[in-house]
Amino acid sequence: MLTNDDLQKLLSSGSGPRLDILTPGTATIERMARSLVSLANAQGGVLLVPLMIPPGHSSLSPDEAIDRANQAALMSEPHLIIPLPYVVNQSPTLNSGVLVIEVPSGLPHLYGLDGRFLSRSGKRPVVLTSRALRELLLVRDEGSWEAQSPAGCGREDLDWAKVEAYASQTSQVKEPTIEDLLLRRGCIVQQSRKVKPTYAGLLLFGKQPQRWVRGAETLAVRFHGSSMDEVFIRQTLSGTLPEQIRHAELFLGENVAHHAHLGSWIRNDEPPYPPGVLREAVVNAIAHREYRMTGNQIHILVFSDRVEVRSPGRLPGHVTLQNLMNERYSRNESVVQVLADMGYIERLGYGIDRMVHTMRERGHQPPKFEETEAGFMVTLYARPTDRSPVDNLPIPAQNQRMQKMLEFLHRTGRITNRDYQELCPDISPESLRRDFVDMVERGIIMRIGDKRGTYYILK
Image (cartoon, rainbow, N blue to C red; front, side):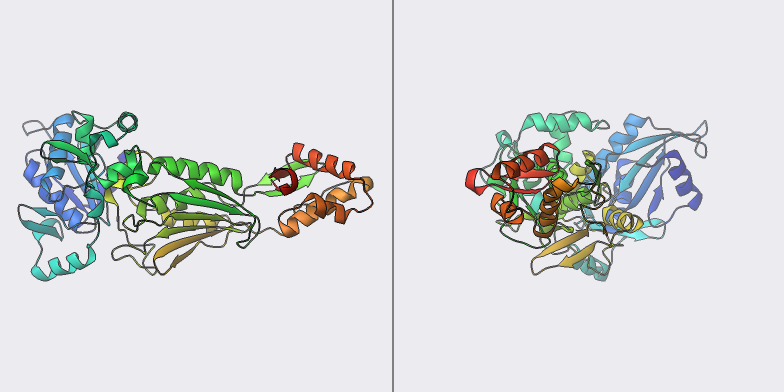
């Protein structure tokens, strides 16, 4: 959302290919639709409408201007799914409030208006030439799937309590009904006077999303070393996409091992990743994966030295590994917009840039981006450390066996009762048992399993 300062910078830069300014007198629904469609078929941009100009000229009320903007977005074919229009107040240059309508870059469709396809040439909307139209069609060949409605679903397959919660947190909504909001967001369609959820609506608000989109879930696994082995904690995260994001955040919070340094038996944890980068990687995967590839999941793999987030579907549209930092393309336009409304993602698409900048700024190895045979993978590397988890640990001589336990854990990832007995053959089994209990109570190790299958890992 633009601030007053942002607005002044835009105005001082003058009109350009990504900025259009209409006066209240020219801001008809049709003229606004032309501007929005031309921006959407280009590289996105901003449409500004001053609500009042000097006395003697026409003006618009904020509600009237927002209503015109919403109607204009619905005139395009397909409908434009854009952030909610809003008003920035008290612009010194324009002497009043200004309506701001943002059109994100990287939209997945080719947008038409009354049978014509518009783009930008300098400051004006222009009709695309046949050659330009063919080139744009080649680039934008995805994005229609999420707007379809699967056979057999109906209004009752949406969880309307979740829809109401979403509507209540989207404070700028001026829609007459909740259904109008979902229609504008591409989450429902009207067929034969009946409301039917789209794939996007079912993924975001469905009672049973995986019934309609098989594999639309996330598999989270924590391994105890730097490679895949038979020792792991596994959890399948299902439900709606917002629920999967929240569950993934909890899983990572519980299973990403901090760098623990022990001094005077006080545990000091250092986060191995900058705040927010793991969440950014997971949200991007959930928002942008290829959901048409049913039967395959997003994978979150947690290792001791890195986290890998693997997503079904290669990079969309015209985005490549070479231009990933500069280009934008939304494969799932409705999903991205609703997650943006909920605060999970930025519609402007700066998540990857921020992730790379933050990792470098904190002294981490840069994230690694890879395309696999049928997917995309992001690898985030933990902060390197020169210290062992048992450095600076002042253990009395009679408790040196505990240091052996910690060193063994650091080397192998886990320890069993038998392992500990082999490390300390001269110590009674009861003393070794009390060592385990003591270390668990101190929060240094964690017990996994039961009876003969019990083993311990660093917490």
